[in-house]
Length: 137
Image (cartoon, rainbow, N blue to C red):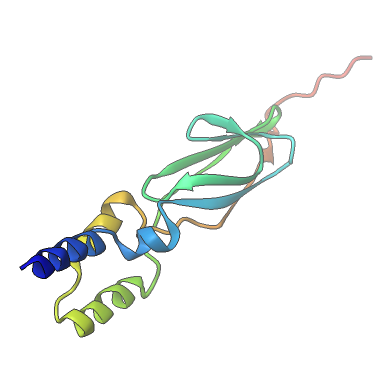
C-alpha cells in the first residue's frame, strides 16, 4: 500500500509540470533592434535600450520606438504555438500512456510556456516630412 501511495504522489508531481515549462521556462530572450539607433525604445510602457530583453511568453508585449523628427513605429508581439509542437506533445503521450497528458498541457498553456515569441523584433523609424525645418538667415 505504501508503494502505491508513493507511486501516486510521484506521478502526481511528475505529471503536474508541463514539458515546455521544464524545457524552456515561461520567459524568452528577444533581441530588439531600432533604426536610427538613438531612438527611444519602450516595451510595455517601460523605457529600455535596444538589444536583448527577457519577456514573458504568455503575454502580449507592445514595443514602441520614438525620436523627434520621425514618425513613431510600433509593434505588438504575441506568443504562438510553434508548428508541430502540439503533435509532438500529444502523440508521444498517447503512444506511451494511451491517453494524452492533459494536465501538463494545461499547465503549459496557462503559464505561457507553450508560446513562442519572435526571437528578433526590428523597428525602423521614418523621417516625418511634415516637420518644417527652421533655418536662420
